[in-house]
Figure 1 (cartoon, rainbow, N blue to C red):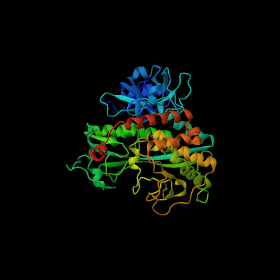
Figure 2 (figure 1 turned 180 degrees about the vertical axis):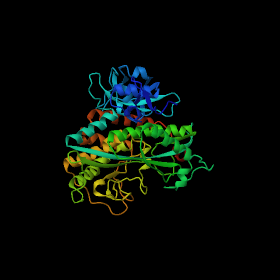
Figure 3 (figure 1 turned 90 degrees about the vertical axis):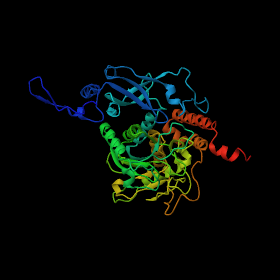
Figure 4 (figure 1 turned 135 degrees about the vertical axis):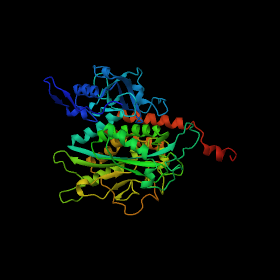
Length: 477
C-alpha cells in the first residue's frame, strides 16, 4: 500500500520544511498543482476518472497518474448515459432521440473529490467527473448535472438546501446463479443471520471484521459515517451520513456503495442495494433528511425567530405531497423497487406527513428549531443518489415557489388503507412525463432520456418468465 503520510522534507536551506497541509487531505485538492503534488506524495500510479450514469453505476476511464496531470482530454460516448441497467438502449420517441453520431462528452474532473482507492493493491486514486459538451456547455441529462441544476434554482432564490441520507443494504451469500433466491450470510457465530434484529449490537458484531473494513476504507477516502446499525432484515444494515451540501452527500453515497460492495467481496459475500432482495424480508430504503438555509442569514427557513414553523416549512411539505408521487420513478427506479412499497409495511405508499410518524411518507423528526427538517421516507436504496436528491429537493422547491399548502399532519397509522403512489414502473413513468413543473426544474432533456430508459427496462423485464408464473399457471390455466 502507498504511504499515508510523510512528515517533513529537507528544505533547500538545509533545514526541515513543514509538509503542506493539503497533502494530508484524505479527500480533495484545490487545483491541478496541488493535485500533482498530492498524487506524487502518495506514490499514486493510476487514476480512476469516474462519473455516475443514470443508474448510479460508476463509468469512466483509468489512466496513469502522469497522463492525468498532463492536460489530457478525457471523453466518454454520449450513449453511456442513455443505457439501460441491462446494457440495452431505448427506442426513439416521446421526446427522446438517440444521437445519430453518438458523439463524445468531455469529462471534467472535480478535484475536490480526489481520493485514494483503498481496496486496490497498486497505489490508485479516483476522482469524480462532470460532463460537458465539446463547446463547454453542461450536459443537461447526466445525473450530477441534474442535481446541480436543482441547486442552481435554489441559489437563484437565495437558498441553500442541506441534506442527510440514510442508506440501507443487505449482506447476502454469494449468488453467481440469478435463478436461485438470495439467502442471508453466515456471521462469525457460524450460523445464518436471522431477521428481527433491529438495532441489535450483536447483529452488528456478527460482521465485525467486515464493518472494520468499511470504516477503514471510508476513513482512507475522507468519507464520514455518522452511525451504523443493524436493521430489521436478516443481514440488513444501515449507514447514516452527516448532513451537508447535496452534491457532496450524493458523491459520498456514490462512493459508499462502491466501498461497501468491495468490503463485502473481501469477505466472500455480496452487499446489495436492491430495494427488495429477499422475499419475506423488509425492503431497503434511502431516507433523505432535508432542510433549507437562507444564504444571507444562515438560518433555517423552516423555523421562525420564536421557534415556530414557517409558511416555507408547510409549503415545502405541500410541494412534496403534490409532486413526489409524480417523481416516484426517480425514487423507485426499477420493477423490484415497487415490491418494497406495500401496505402494512414501514415503506410508505402514501403522500401524508406527520410529526415523528414513521408510517407517513414525510416525517418531521423531533428536533430543536434550528435543526427542523423533513425526512422523505419514500426513496429506495436502489435509487441513484444524485437523482433522488434532485427530485426530492425539486418537489419541495415547487411547493415554496407556488406556495402549495400542506395537508394537516397525520396523527395515526397512515399506511394501512389508501395507496397514494403509483403501483408500478410504467404508471410512475406516465405521471413523471405529465408533470411539467418538475420537468422544467429537472430539465426536459433529462426527463425525456430518463423515461425512455425506464420504458426500455420494463420491456426487458417483461421478457422474463418468473417462478410464480410457472408455479400457478403452468398446470392450472
